[in-house]
Amino acid sequence: MKNKEFKFKTNINCGGCIAKVKPALDGEVGIKNWHVDTDNTDKILTVELDSIEEDIVVEIIKAKGFSIENL
Image (cartoon, rainbow, N blue to C red; front, side):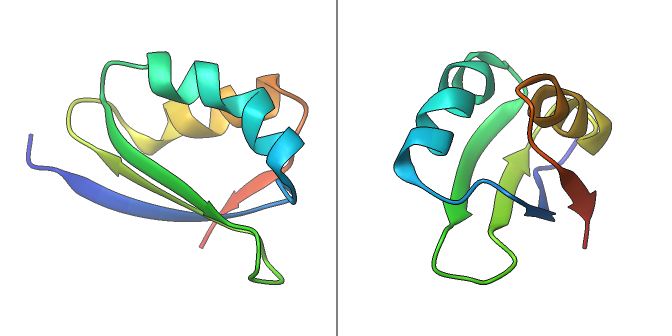
């Protein structure tokens, strides 16, 4: 599978929120890179995937207590 980039609207809005999701996102083998733009009003999470589907990212974020929706 080629690397794919996905963008999600979230409510991850500060460094503390990022710290809460960081271990799960960093620990997922199929996630190459990720970033949350907390300056954007939609708190955009950008994820580059190489071997998993975006549904896994949605599950991870929801499991940490945050909202997430595909853009």
